Length: 115
Image 1: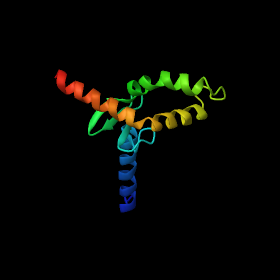
Image 2: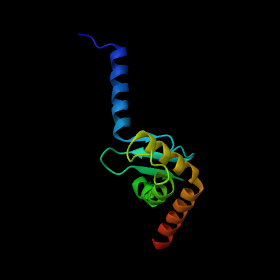
Image 3: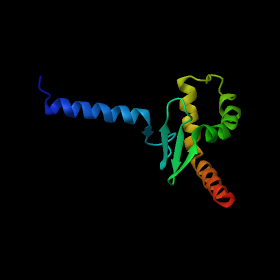
């Protein structure tokens, strides 16, 4: 049995795809330009901003209470963990991208000062 060049290309592409899925970098976190999202399976996802990594879950948690108070409670049609909830949270985070960048910059500055 001969292995064709096409078979080798397909196997190589399959391997690359498996590696990409294992450590999946998505384009923009909540649609915010220049903040990349890294999905890591069961581990907390990361966001990358100015080549620095931050725990995405912890950053989201900072904004989540305000999101519940100002969006979810005022819109009873938004139920937790449905598509409308996630779409609304994406929009909420996108609308606060300047606050998020400020938080990340302050966090990084504090890391450098305490090191």
